[in-house]
Length: 298
Length: 295
Image 1 (cartoon, chains in turn orange, green):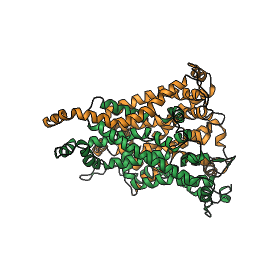
Image 2 (cartoon, rainbow over the protein chains, first blue to last red):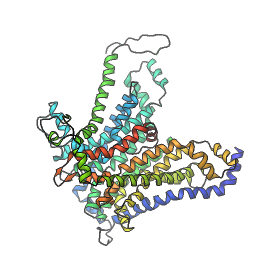
Image 3 (cartoon, rainbow over the protein chains, first blue to last red):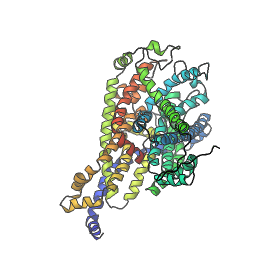
Image 4 (tube, rainbow over the protein chains, first blue to last red):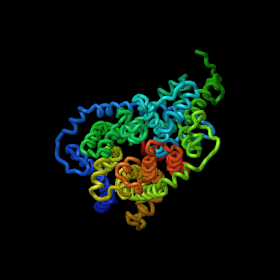
Protein backbone atom coordinates (compact mmCIF):
# COMPACT_ATOMS: atom_id res chain seq x y z
CA UNK A 1 0.00 0.00 0.00
CA UNK A 2 2.72 2.41 0.98
CA UNK A 3 4.68 1.60 -2.15
CA UNK A 4 1.66 2.37 -4.19
CA UNK A 5 1.28 5.72 -2.51
CA UNK A 6 4.88 6.64 -3.23
CA UNK A 7 4.38 5.70 -6.84
CA UNK A 8 1.22 7.73 -6.96
CA UNK A 9 2.98 10.80 -5.67
CA UNK A 10 5.92 10.44 -7.98
CA UNK A 11 3.86 9.93 -11.06
CA UNK A 12 0.83 12.06 -10.40
CA UNK A 13 2.11 15.07 -12.31
CA UNK A 14 3.26 13.10 -15.31
CA UNK A 15 0.43 10.63 -15.01
CA UNK A 16 -2.27 13.25 -15.28
CA UNK A 17 -0.66 14.78 -18.36
CA UNK A 18 -0.32 11.38 -19.98
CA UNK A 19 -3.89 10.56 -19.02
CA UNK A 20 -5.34 13.60 -20.75
CA UNK A 21 -3.06 13.07 -23.72
CA UNK A 22 -4.32 9.51 -24.23
CA UNK A 23 -8.02 10.32 -24.03
CA UNK A 24 -7.61 13.42 -26.21
CA UNK A 25 -8.04 11.66 -29.60
CA UNK A 26 -11.21 9.91 -28.45
CA UNK A 27 -12.62 13.11 -27.03
CA UNK A 28 -11.69 15.00 -30.20
CA UNK A 29 -13.58 12.55 -32.41
CA UNK A 30 -16.58 12.55 -30.11
CA UNK A 31 -16.77 16.30 -29.77
CA UNK A 32 -16.35 16.96 -33.51
CA UNK A 33 -18.62 14.19 -34.77
CA UNK A 34 -21.14 13.61 -31.99
CA UNK A 35 -21.41 16.66 -29.74
CA UNK A 36 -21.02 19.25 -32.49
CA UNK A 37 -23.55 17.58 -34.85
CA UNK A 38 -25.96 17.40 -31.96
CA UNK A 39 -25.68 21.15 -31.42
CA UNK A 40 -26.09 21.66 -35.16
CA UNK A 41 -29.22 19.47 -35.03
CA UNK A 42 -30.76 21.68 -32.36
CA UNK A 43 -29.85 24.77 -34.37
CA UNK A 44 -31.25 23.34 -37.60
CA UNK A 45 -34.53 22.37 -35.95
CA UNK A 46 -35.20 26.07 -35.28
CA UNK A 47 -34.62 27.04 -38.92
CA UNK A 48 -36.36 26.39 -42.21
CA UNK A 49 -33.15 25.04 -43.75
CA UNK A 50 -33.66 23.29 -47.07
CA UNK A 51 -30.65 21.72 -48.79
CA UNK A 52 -29.08 24.23 -51.17
CA UNK A 53 -30.83 27.27 -49.71
CA UNK A 54 -29.83 29.64 -46.92
CA UNK A 55 -31.51 29.06 -43.57
CA UNK A 56 -33.54 31.55 -41.61
CA UNK A 57 -34.62 31.34 -37.99
CA UNK A 58 -38.24 30.31 -37.54
CA UNK A 59 -38.39 29.55 -33.82
CA UNK A 60 -40.62 26.67 -32.82
CA UNK A 61 -42.52 26.59 -36.10
CA UNK A 62 -41.15 23.17 -37.15
CA UNK A 63 -42.29 21.60 -33.90
CA UNK A 64 -45.70 23.28 -34.00
CA UNK A 65 -46.25 22.08 -37.55
CA UNK A 66 -45.42 18.54 -36.51
CA UNK A 67 -48.09 18.70 -33.82
CA UNK A 68 -50.68 19.30 -36.53
CA UNK A 69 -49.31 16.63 -38.82
CA UNK A 70 -51.28 13.37 -38.81
CA UNK A 71 -48.45 11.38 -40.42
CA UNK A 72 -46.19 12.43 -37.56
CA UNK A 73 -48.67 11.20 -34.94
CA UNK A 74 -49.11 7.98 -36.86
CA UNK A 75 -45.31 7.64 -36.73
CA UNK A 76 -45.21 8.20 -32.99
CA UNK A 77 -47.88 5.54 -32.53
CA UNK A 78 -46.05 3.14 -34.84
CA UNK A 79 -42.74 3.66 -33.07
CA UNK A 80 -44.25 2.78 -29.71
CA UNK A 81 -46.19 -0.23 -31.02
CA UNK A 82 -43.11 -1.38 -32.91
CA UNK A 83 -40.70 -0.97 -30.01
CA UNK A 84 -43.04 -2.40 -27.38
CA UNK A 85 -44.10 -5.35 -29.51
CA UNK A 86 -40.66 -6.21 -30.81
CA UNK A 87 -38.84 -5.92 -27.50
CA UNK A 88 -41.36 -8.06 -25.63
CA UNK A 89 -41.37 -10.71 -28.35
CA UNK A 90 -37.58 -10.74 -28.53
CA UNK A 91 -37.49 -11.02 -24.76
CA UNK A 92 -39.88 -13.98 -24.66
CA UNK A 93 -38.30 -15.84 -27.56
CA UNK A 94 -34.80 -15.04 -26.35
CA UNK A 95 -35.61 -16.46 -22.94
CA UNK A 96 -37.00 -19.61 -24.55
CA UNK A 97 -33.91 -19.91 -26.69
CA UNK A 98 -31.61 -19.49 -23.70
CA UNK A 99 -33.48 -22.10 -21.65
CA UNK A 100 -33.37 -24.43 -24.63
CA UNK A 101 -29.64 -23.97 -25.18
CA UNK A 102 -28.96 -24.31 -21.46
CA UNK A 103 -29.94 -28.00 -21.59
CA UNK A 104 -27.22 -30.55 -22.11
CA UNK A 105 -27.29 -32.11 -25.55
CA UNK A 106 -24.92 -33.01 -28.32
CA UNK A 107 -24.04 -30.16 -30.65
CA UNK A 108 -25.12 -27.45 -28.26
CA UNK A 109 -22.28 -25.10 -29.18
CA UNK A 110 -22.96 -25.75 -32.83
CA UNK A 111 -26.66 -24.94 -32.35
CA UNK A 112 -25.77 -21.74 -30.53
CA UNK A 113 -23.57 -20.73 -33.45
CA UNK A 114 -26.24 -21.57 -36.02
CA UNK A 115 -28.93 -19.66 -34.16
CA UNK A 116 -26.74 -16.57 -34.27
CA UNK A 117 -26.75 -16.40 -38.05
CA UNK A 118 -29.77 -14.13 -38.14
CA UNK A 119 -28.06 -11.73 -35.76
CA UNK A 120 -24.71 -11.76 -37.51
CA UNK A 121 -26.09 -11.10 -40.99
CA UNK A 122 -26.04 -7.47 -42.10
CA UNK A 123 -29.34 -5.88 -41.06
CA UNK A 124 -30.02 -4.52 -44.53
CA UNK A 125 -29.58 -7.97 -46.08
CA UNK A 126 -31.91 -9.53 -43.50
CA UNK A 127 -34.52 -6.93 -44.40
CA UNK A 128 -34.22 -7.74 -48.10
CA UNK A 129 -34.63 -11.42 -47.27
CA UNK A 130 -37.82 -10.70 -45.30
CA UNK A 131 -39.14 -8.54 -48.11
CA UNK A 132 -38.73 -11.59 -50.31
CA UNK A 133 -40.21 -13.90 -47.62
CA UNK A 134 -43.43 -11.86 -47.53
CA UNK A 135 -43.64 -11.41 -51.29
CA UNK A 136 -47.27 -11.96 -52.30
CA UNK A 137 -47.09 -14.46 -55.15
CA UNK A 138 -43.78 -16.27 -54.75
CA UNK A 139 -42.88 -15.61 -51.11
CA UNK A 140 -42.16 -18.38 -48.67
CA UNK A 141 -44.53 -17.17 -45.94
CA UNK A 142 -47.60 -17.37 -48.16
CA UNK A 143 -46.41 -20.68 -49.59
CA UNK A 144 -46.10 -22.21 -46.11
CA UNK A 145 -49.46 -20.84 -44.98
CA UNK A 146 -51.05 -22.19 -48.16
CA UNK A 147 -49.41 -25.59 -47.84
CA UNK A 148 -50.54 -25.96 -44.24
CA UNK A 149 -54.10 -25.01 -45.19
CA UNK A 150 -54.31 -21.86 -43.06
CA UNK A 151 -55.05 -19.62 -46.03
CA UNK A 152 -56.50 -20.29 -49.48
CA UNK A 153 -55.69 -17.01 -51.20
CA UNK A 154 -52.30 -15.31 -51.00
CA UNK A 155 -52.16 -12.42 -48.54
CA UNK A 156 -50.85 -9.11 -49.90
CA UNK A 157 -48.85 -8.36 -46.76
CA UNK A 158 -47.63 -4.93 -47.80
CA UNK A 159 -51.00 -3.58 -48.93
CA UNK A 160 -52.64 -3.13 -45.55
CA UNK A 161 -51.29 -1.05 -42.65
CA UNK A 162 -51.95 -3.77 -40.06
CA UNK A 163 -50.19 -6.58 -41.93
CA UNK A 164 -47.42 -4.28 -43.18
CA UNK A 165 -46.36 -3.39 -39.64
CA UNK A 166 -46.42 -7.12 -38.84
CA UNK A 167 -43.87 -7.78 -41.57
CA UNK A 168 -41.36 -5.26 -40.25
CA UNK A 169 -41.86 -6.47 -36.69
CA UNK A 170 -41.26 -10.07 -37.75
CA UNK A 171 -38.01 -9.06 -39.39
CA UNK A 172 -36.90 -7.14 -36.31
CA UNK A 173 -37.73 -10.02 -33.96
CA UNK A 174 -35.90 -12.41 -36.25
CA UNK A 175 -32.74 -10.31 -36.16
CA UNK A 176 -32.85 -9.47 -32.46
CA UNK A 177 -33.87 -12.74 -30.78
CA UNK A 178 -30.40 -14.36 -30.85
CA UNK A 179 -28.90 -11.40 -29.02
CA UNK A 180 -31.36 -11.83 -26.16
CA UNK A 181 -30.92 -15.60 -26.30
CA UNK A 182 -27.14 -15.60 -26.07
CA UNK A 183 -27.00 -12.87 -23.44
CA UNK A 184 -29.57 -14.70 -21.29
CA UNK A 185 -27.71 -17.96 -21.83
CA UNK A 186 -24.51 -16.40 -20.54
CA UNK A 187 -26.47 -15.18 -17.52
CA UNK A 188 -28.06 -18.60 -16.93
CA UNK A 189 -24.67 -20.24 -16.85
CA UNK A 190 -23.55 -18.10 -13.94
CA UNK A 191 -26.43 -19.22 -11.68
CA UNK A 192 -25.08 -21.64 -9.04
CA UNK A 193 -26.50 -25.16 -9.45
CA UNK A 194 -26.92 -25.47 -5.68
CA UNK A 195 -29.85 -23.07 -5.74
CA UNK A 196 -31.83 -25.39 -8.00
CA UNK A 197 -30.85 -28.46 -6.03
CA UNK A 198 -32.00 -26.87 -2.80
CA UNK A 199 -35.29 -25.86 -4.41
CA UNK A 200 -35.82 -29.39 -5.74
CA UNK A 201 -35.39 -30.83 -2.30
CA UNK A 202 -37.99 -28.35 -1.09
CA UNK A 203 -40.29 -29.73 -3.79
CA UNK A 204 -40.30 -26.82 -6.26
CA UNK A 205 -41.51 -27.55 -9.81
CA UNK A 206 -39.91 -26.28 -13.02
CA UNK A 207 -42.08 -23.21 -13.21
CA UNK A 208 -41.56 -22.25 -9.58
CA UNK A 209 -37.82 -22.66 -10.00
CA UNK A 210 -37.88 -20.42 -13.06
CA UNK A 211 -39.95 -17.76 -11.33
CA UNK A 212 -38.18 -17.74 -7.99
CA UNK A 213 -34.59 -18.56 -8.94
CA UNK A 214 -33.88 -18.02 -12.62
CA UNK A 215 -35.59 -14.65 -13.10
CA UNK A 216 -34.27 -12.97 -9.93
CA UNK A 217 -30.76 -14.26 -10.63
CA UNK A 218 -30.92 -12.95 -14.18
CA UNK A 219 -32.26 -9.52 -13.28
CA UNK A 220 -29.07 -7.64 -14.09
CA UNK A 221 -28.66 -9.20 -17.54
CA UNK A 222 -32.37 -8.84 -18.21
CA UNK A 223 -32.38 -5.17 -17.37
CA UNK A 224 -29.28 -4.26 -19.38
CA UNK A 225 -30.23 -6.27 -22.44
CA UNK A 226 -33.80 -4.98 -22.49
CA UNK A 227 -32.73 -1.36 -22.18
CA UNK A 228 -30.08 -1.66 -24.87
CA UNK A 229 -32.53 -3.37 -27.15
CA UNK A 230 -35.21 -0.77 -26.48
CA UNK A 231 -32.85 1.99 -27.57
CA UNK A 232 -31.73 0.20 -30.73
CA UNK A 233 -35.24 -0.91 -31.66
CA UNK A 234 -36.62 2.56 -31.11
CA UNK A 235 -34.02 4.00 -33.47
CA UNK A 236 -34.33 1.21 -36.07
CA UNK A 237 -34.32 2.36 -39.66
CA UNK A 238 -33.63 -0.56 -41.97
CA UNK A 239 -36.81 -2.60 -41.48
CA UNK A 240 -39.32 0.11 -42.31
CA UNK A 241 -37.01 1.72 -44.87
CA UNK A 242 -36.34 -1.41 -46.90
CA UNK A 243 -39.37 -3.63 -46.33
CA UNK A 244 -42.37 -1.30 -46.37
CA UNK A 245 -40.73 2.02 -47.31
CA UNK A 246 -43.12 3.58 -44.80
CA UNK A 247 -46.09 2.44 -46.87
CA UNK A 248 -48.90 1.80 -47.54
CA UNK A 249 -49.82 5.50 -47.43
CA UNK A 250 -47.19 6.46 -44.81
CA UNK A 251 -48.78 4.13 -42.27
CA UNK A 252 -45.62 2.26 -41.22
CA UNK A 253 -43.12 5.08 -40.80
CA UNK A 254 -40.88 4.98 -37.75
CA UNK A 255 -39.06 8.02 -36.34
CA UNK A 256 -35.94 7.15 -38.31
CA UNK A 257 -37.61 6.62 -41.68
CA UNK A 258 -39.73 9.75 -41.39
CA UNK A 259 -36.60 11.72 -40.49
CA UNK A 260 -34.84 10.28 -43.52
CA UNK A 261 -37.83 10.87 -45.78
CA UNK A 262 -38.20 14.56 -44.84
CA UNK A 263 -34.55 15.39 -44.19
CA UNK A 264 -32.64 13.57 -46.94
CA UNK A 265 -35.17 12.52 -49.59
CA UNK A 266 -37.05 15.85 -49.54
CA UNK A 267 -34.04 17.85 -48.36
CA UNK A 268 -35.99 19.69 -45.63
CA UNK A 269 -33.25 19.56 -43.00
CA UNK A 270 -35.01 21.82 -40.50
CA UNK A 271 -38.16 19.74 -40.31
CA UNK A 272 -36.21 16.48 -40.43
CA UNK A 273 -34.05 17.30 -37.42
CA UNK A 274 -37.13 18.46 -35.53
CA UNK A 275 -38.62 14.99 -36.00
CA UNK A 276 -35.47 13.22 -34.84
CA UNK A 277 -35.22 15.48 -31.80
CA UNK A 278 -38.63 14.27 -30.66
CA UNK A 279 -36.89 10.98 -29.88
CA UNK A 280 -34.48 12.69 -27.57
CA UNK A 281 -36.50 12.98 -24.33
CA UNK A 282 -37.42 9.30 -24.54
CA UNK A 283 -33.81 8.35 -25.16
CA UNK A 284 -32.63 10.47 -22.25
CA UNK A 285 -34.90 8.54 -19.90
CA UNK A 286 -33.67 5.20 -21.24
CA UNK A 287 -30.04 6.29 -21.11
CA UNK A 288 -30.43 7.56 -17.57
CA UNK A 289 -31.86 4.21 -16.43
CA UNK A 290 -29.16 2.31 -18.26
CA UNK A 291 -26.39 4.40 -16.82
CA UNK A 292 -27.65 4.11 -13.26
CA UNK A 293 -27.91 0.38 -13.55
CA UNK A 294 -24.56 -0.15 -15.27
CA UNK A 295 -22.79 1.78 -12.53
CA UNK A 296 -24.62 -0.09 -9.84
CA UNK A 297 -23.71 -3.43 -11.41
CA UNK A 298 -20.08 -2.59 -12.07
CA UNK B 1 -52.66 -33.62 -10.94
CA UNK B 2 -50.78 -36.84 -11.38
CA UNK B 3 -48.75 -38.02 -8.48
CA UNK B 4 -45.02 -37.84 -8.86
CA UNK B 5 -43.05 -40.69 -7.41
CA UNK B 6 -39.64 -39.99 -6.12
CA UNK B 7 -36.94 -42.57 -6.11
CA UNK B 8 -34.13 -41.99 -3.73
CA UNK B 9 -30.67 -43.34 -4.17
CA UNK B 10 -27.74 -42.47 -2.08
CA UNK B 11 -26.04 -39.22 -3.07
CA UNK B 12 -28.60 -38.48 -5.73
CA UNK B 13 -30.93 -35.56 -5.93
CA UNK B 14 -34.64 -36.22 -5.93
CA UNK B 15 -35.88 -36.59 -9.47
CA UNK B 16 -39.36 -37.15 -10.79
CA UNK B 17 -39.36 -40.55 -12.52
CA UNK B 18 -42.32 -40.00 -14.71
CA UNK B 19 -42.84 -38.33 -18.09
CA UNK B 20 -39.25 -38.15 -19.27
CA UNK B 21 -40.33 -38.70 -22.84
CA UNK B 22 -43.02 -36.06 -22.96
CA UNK B 23 -40.80 -33.65 -21.05
CA UNK B 24 -38.09 -34.08 -23.62
CA UNK B 25 -40.64 -33.61 -26.35
CA UNK B 26 -41.91 -30.31 -24.95
CA UNK B 27 -38.67 -28.83 -23.74
CA UNK B 28 -36.34 -30.12 -26.38
CA UNK B 29 -37.87 -31.16 -29.70
CA UNK B 30 -40.54 -28.48 -29.99
CA UNK B 31 -38.13 -25.59 -29.30
CA UNK B 32 -35.53 -27.23 -31.51
CA UNK B 33 -37.89 -27.37 -34.49
CA UNK B 34 -39.29 -23.92 -33.79
CA UNK B 35 -35.96 -22.13 -33.47
CA UNK B 36 -34.34 -23.98 -36.33
CA UNK B 37 -37.31 -23.18 -38.55
CA UNK B 38 -37.76 -19.57 -37.52
CA UNK B 39 -34.13 -18.55 -37.32
CA UNK B 40 -32.61 -20.54 -40.16
CA UNK B 41 -35.29 -20.91 -42.82
CA UNK B 42 -34.98 -17.33 -44.18
CA UNK B 43 -31.22 -17.70 -44.33
CA UNK B 44 -31.38 -20.98 -46.25
CA UNK B 45 -34.03 -19.61 -48.51
CA UNK B 46 -31.74 -16.71 -49.40
CA UNK B 47 -29.06 -19.18 -50.48
CA UNK B 48 -31.55 -21.40 -52.34
CA UNK B 49 -33.00 -18.42 -54.19
CA UNK B 50 -29.54 -17.29 -55.24
CA UNK B 51 -28.89 -20.56 -57.12
CA UNK B 52 -32.41 -21.26 -58.36
CA UNK B 53 -33.28 -20.81 -62.04
CA UNK B 54 -35.86 -18.05 -62.64
CA UNK B 55 -38.25 -20.49 -64.30
CA UNK B 56 -38.52 -22.42 -61.04
CA UNK B 57 -38.56 -19.35 -58.84
CA UNK B 58 -41.61 -17.86 -60.51
CA UNK B 59 -43.55 -21.09 -60.81
CA UNK B 60 -46.57 -20.80 -58.51
CA UNK B 61 -47.19 -24.54 -58.43
CA UNK B 62 -43.73 -25.27 -57.09
CA UNK B 63 -43.09 -25.12 -53.32
CA UNK B 64 -40.46 -22.35 -52.93
CA UNK B 65 -37.95 -24.41 -50.96
CA UNK B 66 -37.72 -27.05 -53.71
CA UNK B 67 -34.67 -26.99 -55.92
CA UNK B 68 -34.61 -29.08 -59.12
CA UNK B 69 -31.60 -27.59 -60.84
CA UNK B 70 -29.06 -24.94 -59.98
CA UNK B 71 -27.72 -21.98 -61.89
CA UNK B 72 -24.87 -19.49 -61.55
CA UNK B 73 -26.69 -16.90 -63.64
CA UNK B 74 -27.69 -14.74 -60.69
CA UNK B 75 -24.12 -14.51 -59.49
CA UNK B 76 -22.92 -13.71 -63.01
CA UNK B 77 -25.47 -10.94 -63.31
CA UNK B 78 -24.17 -9.53 -60.04
CA UNK B 79 -20.72 -9.11 -61.53
CA UNK B 80 -21.81 -8.12 -65.03
CA UNK B 81 -24.52 -5.56 -64.41
CA UNK B 82 -23.60 -4.13 -61.01
CA UNK B 83 -20.32 -2.62 -59.79
CA UNK B 84 -20.22 -5.43 -57.24
CA UNK B 85 -16.41 -5.68 -57.11
CA UNK B 86 -16.07 -1.95 -56.48
CA UNK B 87 -18.68 -2.05 -53.72
CA UNK B 88 -16.86 -4.96 -52.11
CA UNK B 89 -13.59 -3.07 -52.30
CA UNK B 90 -15.24 0.01 -50.78
CA UNK B 91 -16.70 -2.05 -47.95
CA UNK B 92 -13.34 -3.63 -47.12
CA UNK B 93 -11.49 -0.34 -47.38
CA UNK B 94 -13.88 1.49 -45.07
CA UNK B 95 -14.27 -1.39 -42.64
CA UNK B 96 -10.57 -2.03 -42.19
CA UNK B 97 -9.59 1.64 -41.89
CA UNK B 98 -12.40 2.47 -39.47
CA UNK B 99 -11.68 -0.61 -37.37
CA UNK B 100 -7.98 0.18 -37.18
CA UNK B 101 -8.44 3.85 -36.30
CA UNK B 102 -11.07 3.07 -33.67
CA UNK B 103 -9.08 0.35 -31.96
CA UNK B 104 -5.99 2.55 -31.68
CA UNK B 105 -7.92 5.53 -30.31
CA UNK B 106 -10.18 3.39 -28.13
CA UNK B 107 -7.27 1.44 -26.69
CA UNK B 108 -5.42 4.60 -25.64
CA UNK B 109 -8.53 6.09 -24.09
CA UNK B 110 -9.48 2.82 -22.39
CA UNK B 111 -6.03 2.46 -20.85
CA UNK B 112 -5.99 6.03 -19.70
CA UNK B 113 -9.38 5.80 -18.00
CA UNK B 114 -8.79 2.38 -16.47
CA UNK B 115 -5.27 2.96 -15.20
CA UNK B 116 -4.06 6.52 -15.04
CA UNK B 117 -5.12 8.71 -12.17
CA UNK B 118 -6.23 12.11 -13.24
CA UNK B 119 -9.08 14.38 -12.22
CA UNK B 120 -12.23 13.75 -14.25
CA UNK B 121 -11.30 10.25 -15.46
CA UNK B 122 -14.58 8.70 -14.31
CA UNK B 123 -16.66 11.51 -15.78
CA UNK B 124 -14.91 11.12 -19.13
CA UNK B 125 -15.51 7.38 -18.97
CA UNK B 126 -19.22 7.87 -18.40
CA UNK B 127 -19.34 10.52 -21.12
CA UNK B 128 -17.84 8.09 -23.61
CA UNK B 129 -20.30 5.40 -22.56
CA UNK B 130 -23.20 7.83 -23.09
CA UNK B 131 -22.05 8.47 -26.65
CA UNK B 132 -22.28 4.76 -27.23
CA UNK B 133 -25.98 4.90 -26.40
CA UNK B 134 -26.82 7.80 -28.73
CA UNK B 135 -28.41 6.23 -31.78
CA UNK B 136 -27.30 7.19 -35.26
CA UNK B 137 -30.85 8.20 -36.11
CA UNK B 138 -30.37 11.32 -34.06
CA UNK B 139 -27.15 12.35 -35.78
CA UNK B 140 -27.26 11.42 -39.44
CA UNK B 141 -29.02 14.57 -40.67
CA UNK B 142 -26.68 17.12 -39.07
CA UNK B 143 -23.69 14.92 -39.93
CA UNK B 144 -24.67 14.80 -43.59
CA UNK B 145 -24.95 18.58 -43.51
CA UNK B 146 -21.58 19.06 -41.77
CA UNK B 147 -19.69 16.58 -43.96
CA UNK B 148 -20.93 18.31 -47.07
CA UNK B 149 -19.78 21.64 -45.71
CA UNK B 150 -16.35 20.18 -44.93
CA UNK B 151 -16.15 18.98 -48.52
CA UNK B 152 -15.90 15.28 -47.74
CA UNK B 153 -19.55 14.35 -48.32
CA UNK B 154 -20.21 11.62 -50.88
CA UNK B 155 -16.84 9.90 -50.41
CA UNK B 156 -15.38 6.93 -48.61
CA UNK B 157 -13.53 9.37 -46.35
CA UNK B 158 -16.84 10.54 -44.91
CA UNK B 159 -17.50 6.95 -43.79
CA UNK B 160 -14.00 6.31 -42.42
CA UNK B 161 -14.32 9.49 -40.41
CA UNK B 162 -17.82 8.87 -39.05
CA UNK B 163 -17.80 5.13 -38.25
CA UNK B 164 -15.36 5.66 -35.36
CA UNK B 165 -18.04 7.74 -33.62
CA UNK B 166 -19.89 4.56 -32.74
CA UNK B 167 -16.85 2.25 -32.70
CA UNK B 168 -14.60 4.24 -30.35
CA UNK B 169 -17.04 4.30 -27.41
CA UNK B 170 -17.50 0.56 -27.76
CA UNK B 171 -13.75 -0.16 -28.00
CA UNK B 172 -12.99 2.11 -25.07
CA UNK B 173 -15.65 0.55 -22.89
CA UNK B 174 -14.66 -3.06 -23.59
CA UNK B 175 -10.89 -2.53 -23.45
CA UNK B 176 -11.27 -0.54 -20.25
CA UNK B 177 -12.66 -3.69 -18.66
CA UNK B 178 -9.73 -5.76 -19.90
CA UNK B 179 -7.12 -3.26 -18.75
CA UNK B 180 -8.74 -2.96 -15.35
CA UNK B 181 -8.57 -6.75 -14.92
CA UNK B 182 -4.77 -6.82 -15.43
CA UNK B 183 -3.03 -6.47 -12.04
CA UNK B 184 -1.37 -3.13 -11.57
CA UNK B 185 1.61 -4.86 -9.97
CA UNK B 186 2.71 -6.43 -13.26
CA UNK B 187 3.07 -3.01 -14.76
CA UNK B 188 4.82 -1.63 -11.72
CA UNK B 189 7.35 -4.47 -11.86
CA UNK B 190 8.17 -3.59 -15.44
CA UNK B 191 8.60 0.03 -14.44
CA UNK B 192 10.84 -0.88 -11.53
CA UNK B 193 12.91 -2.88 -14.02
CA UNK B 194 13.43 0.28 -16.01
CA UNK B 195 10.57 0.54 -18.47
CA UNK B 196 8.86 3.87 -18.93
CA UNK B 197 5.08 3.81 -18.53
CA UNK B 198 4.54 3.72 -22.29
CA UNK B 199 7.01 0.85 -22.66
CA UNK B 200 5.32 -1.04 -19.85
CA UNK B 201 1.98 -0.46 -21.58
CA UNK B 202 3.18 -1.65 -24.98
CA UNK B 203 5.34 -4.56 -23.85
CA UNK B 204 3.39 -5.88 -20.88
CA UNK B 205 -0.21 -4.68 -20.83
CA UNK B 206 -1.09 -4.89 -24.52
CA UNK B 207 -0.09 -8.56 -24.97
CA UNK B 208 -2.10 -9.49 -21.87
CA UNK B 209 -5.20 -7.82 -23.30
CA UNK B 210 -5.08 -9.84 -26.55
CA UNK B 211 -8.48 -11.55 -26.06
CA UNK B 212 -10.00 -8.11 -25.60
CA UNK B 213 -8.47 -6.93 -28.85
CA UNK B 214 -9.77 -9.96 -30.70
CA UNK B 215 -13.36 -9.46 -29.59
CA UNK B 216 -13.18 -5.73 -30.16
CA UNK B 217 -11.86 -6.22 -33.70
CA UNK B 218 -14.59 -8.71 -34.53
CA UNK B 219 -17.25 -6.31 -33.38
CA UNK B 220 -15.78 -3.27 -35.07
CA UNK B 221 -15.45 -5.21 -38.29
CA UNK B 222 -19.05 -6.40 -38.11
CA UNK B 223 -20.49 -3.05 -37.15
CA UNK B 224 -18.67 -1.26 -39.97
CA UNK B 225 -19.37 -3.97 -42.51
CA UNK B 226 -23.10 -3.98 -41.80
CA UNK B 227 -23.57 -0.21 -41.32
CA UNK B 228 -26.39 1.07 -43.47
CA UNK B 229 -27.77 4.43 -42.33
CA UNK B 230 -24.61 6.52 -42.60
CA UNK B 231 -23.59 5.45 -46.11
CA UNK B 232 -27.24 5.70 -47.16
CA UNK B 233 -27.43 9.33 -46.11
CA UNK B 234 -23.89 10.49 -46.96
CA UNK B 235 -23.23 8.81 -50.29
CA UNK B 236 -24.94 9.41 -53.59
CA UNK B 237 -22.47 8.29 -56.25
CA UNK B 238 -22.81 4.73 -57.38
CA UNK B 239 -19.10 3.95 -57.20
CA UNK B 240 -18.56 5.21 -53.64
CA UNK B 241 -21.20 2.98 -52.04
CA UNK B 242 -20.38 0.11 -49.73
CA UNK B 243 -21.98 -3.30 -50.34
CA UNK B 244 -24.98 -2.97 -48.03
CA UNK B 245 -26.23 0.26 -49.58
CA UNK B 246 -25.23 -0.71 -53.10
CA UNK B 247 -27.34 -3.84 -53.09
CA UNK B 248 -30.38 -2.16 -51.59
CA UNK B 249 -30.12 0.60 -54.22
CA UNK B 250 -30.49 -2.07 -56.93
CA UNK B 251 -33.40 -3.78 -55.24
CA UNK B 252 -35.94 -2.35 -57.63
CA UNK B 253 -35.05 -2.13 -61.28
CA UNK B 254 -37.90 0.09 -62.44
CA UNK B 255 -40.82 -1.98 -61.25
CA UNK B 256 -39.19 -5.40 -61.44
CA UNK B 257 -37.24 -7.22 -58.76
CA UNK B 258 -34.34 -9.46 -59.73
CA UNK B 259 -34.69 -11.63 -56.67
CA UNK B 260 -32.06 -14.14 -57.76
CA UNK B 261 -29.26 -11.60 -58.07
CA UNK B 262 -30.40 -9.70 -54.99
CA UNK B 263 -30.19 -12.88 -52.94
CA UNK B 264 -26.85 -13.74 -54.52
CA UNK B 265 -25.60 -10.32 -53.45
CA UNK B 266 -27.05 -10.83 -49.98
CA UNK B 267 -25.31 -14.19 -49.64
CA UNK B 268 -21.94 -12.76 -50.65
CA UNK B 269 -22.36 -9.71 -48.39
CA UNK B 270 -23.15 -11.92 -45.40
CA UNK B 271 -20.26 -14.24 -46.12
CA UNK B 272 -17.35 -12.30 -44.53
CA UNK B 273 -19.11 -11.78 -41.20
CA UNK B 274 -20.43 -15.33 -41.10
CA UNK B 275 -16.95 -16.74 -41.75
CA UNK B 276 -15.52 -14.46 -39.09
CA UNK B 277 -18.05 -15.67 -36.52
CA UNK B 278 -17.83 -19.33 -37.31
CA UNK B 279 -14.12 -19.22 -36.54
CA UNK B 280 -14.21 -16.91 -33.56
CA UNK B 281 -17.52 -17.76 -31.90
CA UNK B 282 -15.97 -18.09 -28.47
CA UNK B 283 -14.44 -14.62 -28.45
CA UNK B 284 -17.48 -13.03 -29.80
CA UNK B 285 -19.89 -14.48 -27.28
CA UNK B 286 -17.79 -13.06 -24.46
CA UNK B 287 -17.66 -9.68 -26.17
CA UNK B 288 -21.37 -9.72 -26.83
CA UNK B 289 -22.21 -10.24 -23.21
CA UNK B 290 -19.69 -7.62 -22.16
CA UNK B 291 -21.11 -4.85 -24.24
CA UNK B 292 -24.33 -5.33 -26.15
CA UNK B 293 -23.64 -4.30 -29.70
CA UNK B 294 -26.76 -4.10 -31.74
CA UNK B 295 -30.38 -4.43 -30.66
